[in-house]
Image 1 (cartoon, chains in turn cyan, orange):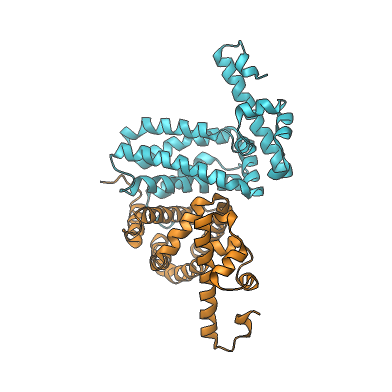
Image 2: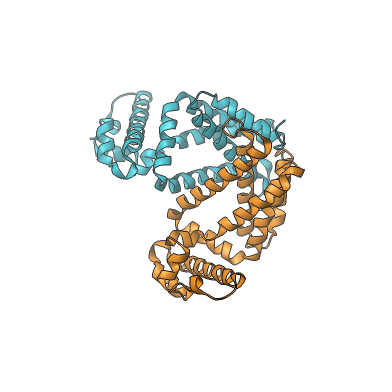
Length: 206
Length: 206
C-alpha cells in the first residue's frame, strides 16, 4: 500500500504528509548512520525507524544514499527562484548574498538535522562523491542562471562560474564555523561577514 | 630488490631516478584508468606498464589510489614555502596569487598528465573522497599558515579559512576553463583574471 497515492485528503494536507514522511525517513537515515556508520545501516532499518514499509521508502528515495542526502535540493530551487527575483535590481554578489539567506534560514530552523548530516558525511566519506556531484550540479545551474542574466556565454566568460564557486566556498566556510561553534554563533551573521570580506576584495583583516 | 635503496649512484641521481619511477607509475596508473576505468586496473597492471615489479610499486605508493593521486603534494609543499617567503612583504591575497603560479607552472609544463588526471576523476567518481580529503588537508595547512602570519586564531577569526577556500575555488574554476579549452588558453592568464576579479570584490563584469 502506498497511502500517499490513494489518500482522499485535500492536496495541501497530502503534500504536508508526504513532506513529513520524507523528513522522517531522512531523519531516521541520518540518526542510524551517525550511530552505526553508513555501511551498517539498511533500507529496512531506516524504514522501520521511520514507521513505514521498505516499499514506502522506495516511493520517496531510490537508495539509502538519497535518503541521507535528503531534500536540500528543495532549498536550492527556492534559492534559485529568489535569485531570479533579485538579480535585475542589484549587483550579482549582493543578489547571491540575499538568496543564500533562504538556505541560512532553513539551516538555522533545523540545526540538529544539519549537525547530524555533517557528522554522517564526516564519518562516512564514501558518501562524498554524491555530495560533490550534487553540489557541482547545483553550482552549474546557478552559473547558467547568472550567465543568462549577464548575457554572457559561461564557457567563454569566467565571471559566472567564479562568483558561484567563490560564494559557495564562502558559504561552506561560514557553515563550518557555525557547526564548529556548536551553533552558538549566528549562521546568518557568519555568512554576512564572509560576503562583506568578498565585497571588500579579501583585503587583510584590520 | 629495491634498487633505490642499494644504489651506489650519488644522491642527486638516485633522487632523480626515484622521481622518474614515481612519475612512470603515476603516468601508467592514469593511462590505464582512463582507458579501462579505475576498478578494472590492478597494481600488477600498473607495475608492468611502468616496467617495475609490484614490490617496487609498493616502495612508492601504498595503494592504487595513491598512484592515481600522484605527487601533487610536492607542489603543495613548494607553494607553501613560496607563500612563507612572500607573506611578510605583501597582502595575503597577492601572496597567494604569486604562490599559486608555482602550481600553474607545474601544470602547464605537464599538461597531458593533468588532462588525463581530470579524465580519470571524471570517469571514476569513487576516487573523489580521497581527492576531497587531500584538498581539505592542504587547505587546512595553508589556513593555519596564514593565521600564524596574521597572528589570529583560525578557529575564531574567519579570514584565513575564507581567503584559502575562495582562492582555491577560483583556482579550480581557472583550471576547469583551461582544461575545457583543451589548453589553448594560458592557465596563468586565467588564474590572473580570477584573482583580479577577487581583488575587485567580484563586481559585475563591465
